[in-house]
Amino acid sequence: MRLFLCLGYRKIGFVTLPLRDNDRSEERRRGYFAALKELGLPADPSLVLEAPGGFSEGADALVRLIQTHPGLDAAFFAGDVLAVGALFECQRRGWAVPGRVAIASFDDLDIGRLRRLLESCFGRTLAPDYFGSKNCHRVYVTEDYRATAILTAEAGLVYLDKFAVTRKAQGEGLGTSVWSRMRRENDKLFWRSQTSNEVNAWYFQQAEGAYRTPKWTVFWYGMNGFEEIERCVKTALALPATLKDHGVEIE
Image (cartoon, rainbow, N blue to C red; front, side, top):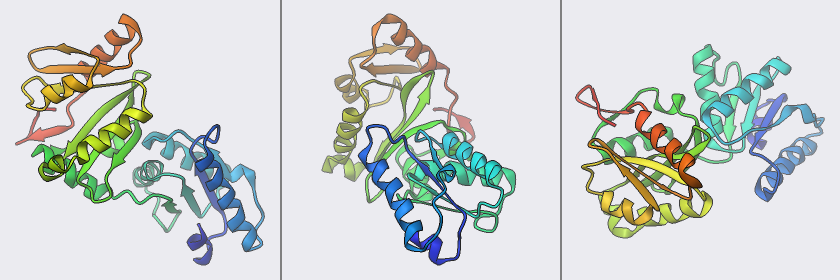
């Protein structure tokens, strides 16, 4: 935020994660206003928006800020997923970054490294528009980019879209560490895996239930009743492939 101010940006929007019962978000919002005050700039509450942590929410927030404040020259986001969504929206609309609007965030998620991690672990090519097309809920990634869990919002539920851990990191327990944190912070979750996947034995240990087809096995925990389980199974089985092997979609 202060870097924006030092670089001469003066009309700076701030997109925060929901503030209710979130001390970290509230602290960051206060930091935004404190930085403005240090340089004697007016605090405009209309430049602050709350948004859930997803790619599409980051894109929508940036568009709303620019529509209501055409002179906006920078936007600061409380999380990288929001910021990446805004970047993709700028690319889609032909808005130069930082020419038309500068974008930054508190976190430091490297999409290039994350893509390489996924492709290395799966041995397949990730769809070019993967990060721009997904309604991301939350991204977990270790500091050294050797393990990640990518959660998306699907049919009103949280879906584990990708879980990837390098071979060496598996032996060091990094995958279990990421999974444990993800489990603590998400009281219900569903995911799918190819039925032939060797990791399914471990997934069965983590899940409360599973539904198997010849191609896919759908896992879940925390679901409430048959209708919710049926919804997660149908949703998982209908999701399009995002990984390709020699041009053939396989997951």
